[in-house]
Structure formats: C-alpha cells, structure tokens
Length: 136
Length: 136
DNA sequence: GTTAAAGCTTACCACGATAGGAAGGTCAAT
DNA sequence: ATTGACCTTCCTATCGTGGTAAGCTTTAAC
Image 1 (cartoon, rainbow over the protein chains, first blue to last red):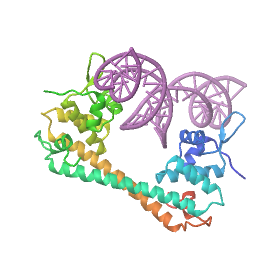
Image 2 (cartoon, rainbow over the protein chains, first blue to last red):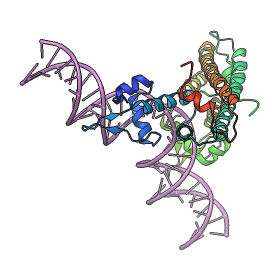
Image 3 (cartoon, rainbow over the protein chains, first blue to last red):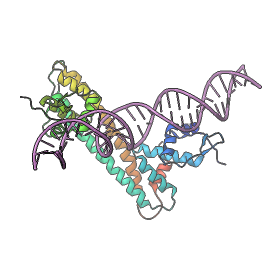
Image 4 (cartoon, rainbow over the protein chains, first blue to last red):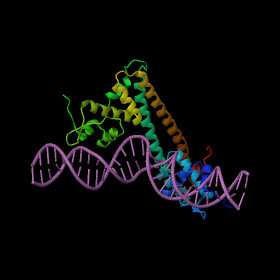
C-alpha cells in the first residue's frame, strides 16, 4: 500500500521545503504530482525517495540541470554507469576548480592581512594592496 | 591635469564592464559620475583608481556590501586599520568555510565515484549512494 | 454543527552580481 | 550628410531560495 502525503508532510519527511518541491515541478525536474479533488498535491513513497535523492545531490553541489540528468539516469534502469560517472567526475572537476580559486583568494588575502597591524593607526597594507595590487 | 574618459574607456582601462560601472553607481557603491552636457558619464583618474580597487576586491571574493565598506575605509584617511583588518579576517573566515564545505563534497563524491566502474553495466554506486545515503 | 487554526493553492516580489538586448540620442570621421 | 561607434535608459534573464498576500480546504476544538 502506497501511503500518500500532502506537500507539507513531504517537505518535513524529505528535508526539501514545499516551496522547492513546487519549484522542482515547475522547472520539470519532477513530474507533475497527482492532485486531490480540491487540488492538493499528493506524493507517494517513490516520489518521496526522489525528493531525498534531489536533496542529497544538492548537498553535493550538483546544479539542478545535473540533478535532472542524475534523476533520469536513476529512473532509467538501462543506463550505463559510464554516463553517471562521467557526470560525477565533471562535477568533481568543477569542485576542484572552485577550491583552487578560493585557496588563491585565501593566500593573497592572508598575506595582506598578515602585513596589517590592525590597530588604531590609519596605515593599512590591505587597502594599499587593493589600491594598487602588484601582480595584476 | 585630470584626464576625463567616458564609460567605455573607463571599462577597458579598469577591466570593469560599462554595465557594471553603471550598476555600482546605481547601488550606491560609486558616487554619481559627472556628465557631459549630453549626458555621457565622465571619469577622472581617481574614479578609475576606485574601479580598479573594486575589481581587485571582487577578485578576492568580497561582496559588494563589503567592498562599499572597504572603499569608504580607503577614502577615509582617518580610518583605523583595525576595522579594515577585521573585515578582511571575517571574509577570510568565510572563504575558509567555503573551502571546507567544498572539500567535504569532494570527499563524498570522490568516494562514490571511486566505487563506480564507469562501464556499460547499469550498476552504479553513485546513484545508489544518492538514493539512500548512509550518513544523512 | 459552528468556528478557528492549520494547511494548501496560485501569483507575485526579492536577493546578488552579471549579461543581453532594444530603442533612441550623440560624437567623430569620412 | 551619412555612417558607425559610442552612449543613454529600460527591460529581461540567470539560479536557487525565501517571503508574502489572497483565497480555498481540511482538521481540530468546542
């Protein structure tokens, strides 16, 4: 027996806000939910699982477009794991690029901050660095 | 002598697009530029320096709100370097948090990808992991 | 059985930083 | 005088999320 729940219950069960559930439906990541006679959306166990899937994928930083692909792979039992892995590796690459970028920011900013006394004097190498950065 | 340039020139000289220069003026980060009789914005050397300042601060990941504060500090020769350093350290903290978050994503995703053969078989531990992640 | 609270619906607006385009005015060179 | 490059404002979109308002439905309390 497939217990059906309304959107609020689905939200609290899956950790995806009702707002976001409607949004995912709107952009086509989720199929349109069935409705009660009065128009309330209803979700079954399979759909709740999909919502959890989406939440976990988002926690790993996948974009909604990527998640749509992942979801399609998941629902297609004939998919090849090659395709899934390629998507995952591509996302891993993006993550690594972001990390490198942030580490570069950190390095530059840390060096500037280290040079700044941080007292009541107006001398500030941080502002000087921003005003005329050497390696630009 | 203060050479004046129009917005396109200012953009190419500073690496900030004309679109963005207008936007910074609109949100109040930059003071309203002087205009020619026909309405063209004009920028002097000091304003060009401010644009460079903004670009470098953005490259370090500062938000526009933070940049507004930094600019105000920079233009206020009486500021205390303490305030600037505090802002910089706060931003450094955010950067570090983002790095940690991305590293966690990377770790989880890398482990899933490692377990996936990536061949023509439909078996895919990545999808299984997303469908029912252990440590949620 | 009435009423109040809680839950659902759609349809808006907002963020933050950026990009694109359309319609029209201006400037400089041919 | 015309052309092309440049400028103006105004509108739209992005992405994922939150909020709010007006109105309908369901549930719970009395």
